[in-house]
Image (cartoon, rainbow, N blue to C red):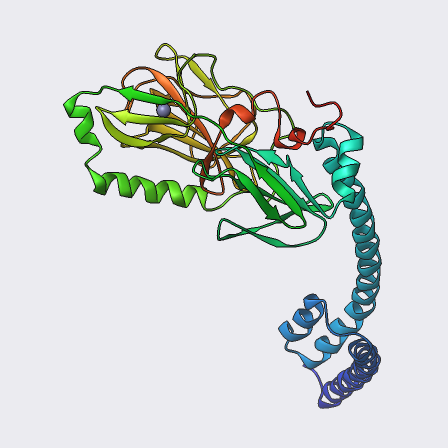
Length: 373
Ligand SMILES: [Zn+2]
């Protein structure tokens, strides 16, 4: 049995030990607290870990010890992080500036033409066009331009700001100012086509509710576009086919004046593979009423290509495609009289002549006037 004395002495030793521990802890706590106070005073508590470690531990002794342990390491890590981050950001900025110049230059036909465009305040690519065409506009700094009563926002690309401007098929020939430049619109003759369709097909055009519902889907798909030029190569014709209806034809359906045909109709056997005209993102792949199985590809900066009447769609909305990828098969779905591809481009929601694009790109429309035929 333990004597009272022994118990007392042992208990007194425990108190003494506890006293040392307490003093030690208070000392560590004071140093830690001071260190933490200095850190907090000299730097805003950017690192949430510090706050977290202090707050999550309830015991007062442990609290300051944790703070003392983490203060130095967080401070050093923070300093190092700031330095590394700054160096990284500077390097990235320099790299992207160099890249944007190289990138932009590479889109033009020659380095001389790129230089000419980059050094000018405004550049119209090209400065002469026809109704139904499209031009590319470049400006040196952020700007908007007004075209046909509508505001067109120029978007940054490389070291410049760009926008596609589509020329309505009904626009009168003449000169039109854009920035400090003048766009010349020269006359173009469009042929007339008479199309005979069955009574049943003719009645398809009267279901306005379905047509309007489709139009809403199409408008939504074309309302957002990638803020960069997604292509790096020339555009290609999606199928070889036989041209049955050229672009811009005035159409009479069963002797009634119809809309202008603002696309190419390329006839080909059912099932012929249809290739993506260039790199892009599928903005819409759907089965529509008049257009049949259709795809809208976004090529960036509000330029879209459209493929209609397909027998089969082989991509889905949101897919990224490369130039030449097979995206669907020729068919005769929707308002169509036989297997063909109805193909067109849209720039800022206006159809534009697809013939402008084949084996070239909008950037290559800027040509050396001396070399032009
Ligand atoms: Zn067509």
